[in-house]
Image (cartoon, rainbow, N blue to C red; front, side, top):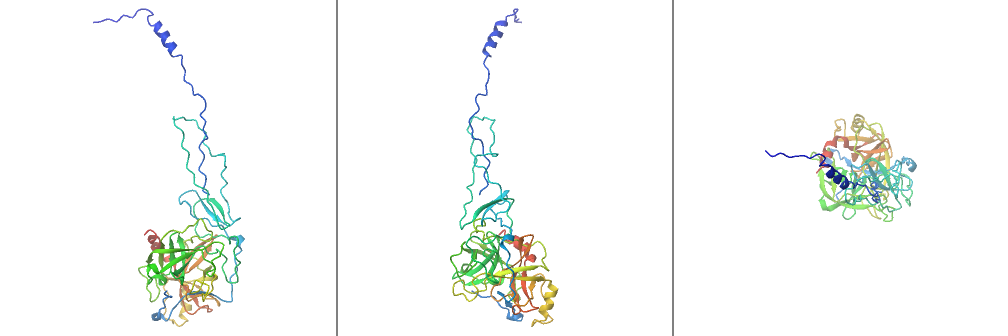
Length: 406
């Protein structure tokens, strides 16, 4: 067996040599120059289908009689948020000056409060975060960024340069969800409600027998005879029409359809274009509003009013509506379908009448507007005690939500 001998203190020179070599020390060195990591800046012709089989029910066109609804003071209107990046914690939209409530504080340009002080060196230069360009606005509007997510059913006061509304007329931009259905030759067909950036809710009797390429949708319209409005309207073609499969053109039951636009419309660049909310509760007993143009030609020679008109009508219980309609030529045997229809009006001189089917009946709750009905049919127009009949939008929420995914 081999024996290894360890002489006394033989290791001392070795130890001293090691200590000398270990005299080097590690140093953190000077702090690396780094601008820091800034937080991401918030980006700034056919006409209406009449039913002779059902006591000559008249489909509807808006009229306003002697009772003129009051104009809503612009200063009381809540500002309109809109979608920018769904799912994020903020959104931006172009709005009239002075109408941005609770804006997000402006992000400092020098990075104050936004940078990450660096203490880690990974041997590589840090990558700069991507930033979204601030929202650029036109038409005298200004960028408004707010916390939270998009809220449908809000609206702005008129933008700079808007003409004043006359008696019975809606103020410019008062109904940003209002859509006009036109032939490709700009003949007025009816109305609808913008419920997403790419979908319009309307009455089935307005579109069920139209060729897809024969009509279009206009949003942001107010004065149909003018091409010099402060914020221009926009025409969009339709890529698909979804008619409720239970629609009956003879009695207009299940009279609901959805138009899918060929391209989404911007909900951020114009305060005159926005969506309306779908209803979540009953508004019976409340006074609601309906607007439209009531004309058959979207040009200077139009036979009806070129400027959008509005009228307020009370939403009444279906039992009262059926009783009122039984007192007309419909007779005592008439039964109003509670799933298909709701009723509003019955006040002399205030109604919707022949020609403007599909226009939304909207009600408000806490400053948010909901599409409760769509103009459908009636007996005569603006007669005391005879309400107008509207599509009961709430009945069709499951069908609407499913169709929006197609």
